[in-house]
Amino acid sequence: MRRVIITVAGLLAAAVVLTGVLVAIWIDDVASRFVDFKVSMLASLAEDVLFFMIVGLGLAIVTLRHPKHDSLETKLRYFFPDSRPSLPFLDFARQEICRLAGLCAEAVQSIKVEEFDSSYNAYRVVFHYRYRLRNMFSTHDYEDVYQAFVMPDRPPPNVPAPKVLGQILELTFKPFEGHGTDYVIHPIDLVHADFDRDIPLRLPPHQEGEITFKFWLWCRLNEEHFVRAKRFVQDFSSTIENASEGAVLVSLDGKLENAVTVLPRQTLILAKLHNLKPRYFFSVWLHKPNDTV
Image (tube, rainbow, N blue to C red):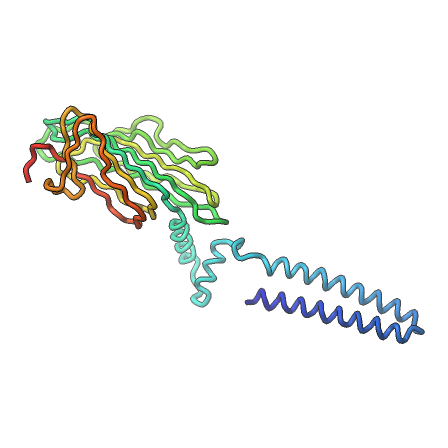
């Protein structure tokens, strides 16, 4: 509103000056005998008109700038005009809104069962995730972090466990336009601790990029293994491939009566989901075919 008032005031001022110029010229023509006064007055009016035109044009350019070019902090002040938000609050709101602007257009989960260790009662499973992110902002960069977190199954007491419970094989973020970053150069062994790393994400307006995260774990039978949506997911798909020598039972709720059998060298589609909100959990349980409820 303030911009509109300033612009209208500038236009009115220019109109008043222009009207004055026309009236002065008319009066001056009537009183043409005052030649010297005429020249002096016209020169003065011309200077005034030029001055107001320059000032009015400058005000118009500044005040009529489209709001989409404002900074994100300025736009947030439009949402909270009367609350006088503190700087920490504005910074928090900016981060949250920026995080929401990162749409996961496609999330793909690939699960590959490689072998079974009968002494540890666990499958060796490769998890491969691909996330295609899109910046929904039209004039701002998308900035966030991706938390790559893996927690291996802990061996129960008095059960011989492998020395390595898993490995991180790949972790990358690659914008479709620009250079990507590989955060895992060599495989990282998971022995006792979890893997937890934040990688920075940055995308220009309307641009896309892809996160790739790949690792393998010893997954004990009848244990839940889940992935959680960290941003809005437009399309999600999950497949499982059985590369082991025996059949594998897999369920999405931990109940054997709802499990399906995956034969050796067979690949099944576990799910195709759409429009998942943040914090949605997708879980998978692995069972042996001779397990009982």
